[in-house]
Image (tube, rainbow, N blue to C red; front, side):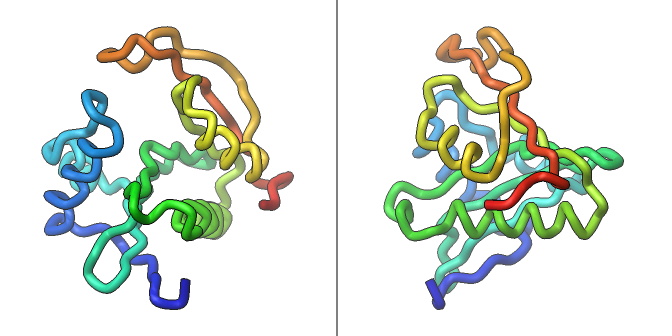
Length: 152
């Protein structure tokens, strides 16, 4: 993992990220335009790079003492290399630096690998959004992590 680094996602990375979105999320993918809107709004997007190649990324939105994990994804060929762990560790470290008290996210109820990752970090379920993923009708579990109690 020594050759991997985390850095801010920039506008010139968006075409590659939009392509990854399609590969990973299919019809639920965020468009390049939506990703651009996220960056323009000041939301924080970080990526794990190997050289110039993006292996994974995560985007967060800060609202006072709450942080929303809007998106996290790892390219299929980069899985099982600790990329998601790097992204999660980084976002939690940055959240603590901003005195964030709670981190929230939504995850498809059928995305068991992602739920295991979030469980590892101390997230717990607080609700369900019915038919959240419009193209598939899949529900989303809403999860929360209290930073004062979390440790991966």
